[in-house]
Amino acid sequence: MKKVFVKTYGCQMNVYDSERMISAMEPSGYVETKSKEEADLILLNTCHIREKAAEKIYSELGRLKFLKEDNPDLKIGVAGCVAQAEGEEIMIRQPAVDLVVGPQSYHRLPSMVKTVTNGKRTLDTEFPEENKFDHLPKDLKRRNNPTAFLTVQEGCDKFCAFCVVPYTRGVEVSRSPEKIIEEARSLVDRGVVEITLLGQNVNAYSNNHSGENYTLSKLIWKLSDISNLQRIRFTTSHPNDMSQDLIDAHRDCEKLMPYLHLPVQSGSDHVLKKMNRKHTADDYRRIIDKLRKARPDLLLSGDFIVGFPGETDEDFLDTLRLIKDIEYGQSYSFKYSSRPGTPAANREEISEIVKKERLAELQTLLKEQQVRLQKKMIGREVNVLFEKPGRLAGQMVGKSEYLHAVHVTGDRIRSGDINKVRIITSETNSLSGRIE
Ligand code: 5AD
Ligand code: SF4
Image (cartoon, rainbow, N blue to C red; front, top):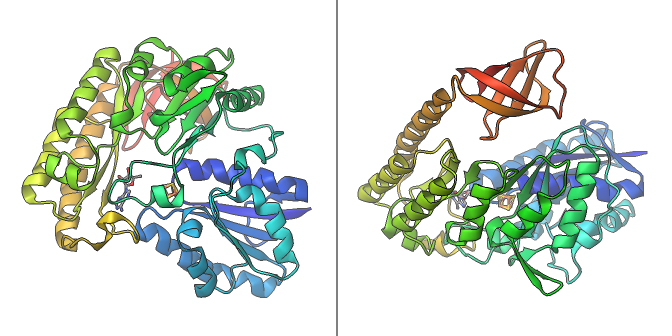
């Protein structure tokens, strides 16, 4: 038996891809290890979204190369979005790297590993004709986690001016509903009760199957027929693809959880235009209104970028205003980071100090909102899907419908249980409660 260690950076799709890479290696006699030191193959599944994310890879590779001194047979591979964007540069900058594989080619990993075992370095960052999903083993292992990710759509045709995704993940491709349903059934057979459908633009999902057009809402409805599947979520969405049928699904589909990650990036029309977002701040407000009409308790999450080239103080205030109007329960915010090859890459940048100040102000506001919405949960009853033991003895942690982490103490709770929990307290990033 050989051992493969995978370190995952970036988004949930990379988490999904890492699992698929491990199962792709299993027929070649590899099992997963959590220890780099005992690995025969180390794969870094990388993220290129911001400069810092990409730089981390080179420092990690700098550390990993020393493991080759103790284990000369160790092979090191770089996968994912940095591999796609700068594979050749990686090969040059870090001779310890044996193989580079892009996000669309990892079904070719076993043959690449054979090549490197024969002493040759290899790189594959093509967007191959054949579909990687058709080549990966289906007989996945039994899972010890009741939640799972399932990629339904990949790539992006939106071309936001700041974003590398259209270049690293390619054009929008939606998998066939048949394959998705089959994979969902197999996950449920292995104990999964909550599935999060993944796509870089998941709500742009569209696939013609047997003469019928499947949208994301239709797919969600079909999946909701799987009886032991209790919960469905999806991420990440673009405001312009938030169609009425999907909004209606939030009203009508019981298994679709009342949580939505809907990035807006900025609240200024001027900046949104420069970002090529193709919607205004008021368009976004209107979509949220519709969603809240359909599902009043929907918890919203967002992504924000501060310091985009050309962002003025007034633009930034517009973003704060939008955040105050919407009220987010969860959020992710970033300083703009110039990415090579993107339309905004050559624009004049805002000073680092201003970016830092704006980010701090924005994050203070977003944190206040998160705390306020968490405190509003106190006294309420939520349904918690328990996943794993908490830090304290006898404690279990799970997620509410609203994706809040909830801690409960109780000996009889098992991973995979869904229980009604009364919320008692709100901590920094989680809630605590008791089963009634
Ligand atoms: N700089 C900063 N943040 C970025 N994001 C994407 N590209 C950049 C960039 N160049 C953020 C966006 C996106 C999230 C995944 O990462 O907010 O929604
Ligand atoms: Fe990072 Fe985007 Fe690639 Fe995910 S798709 S790993 S967020 S660059």
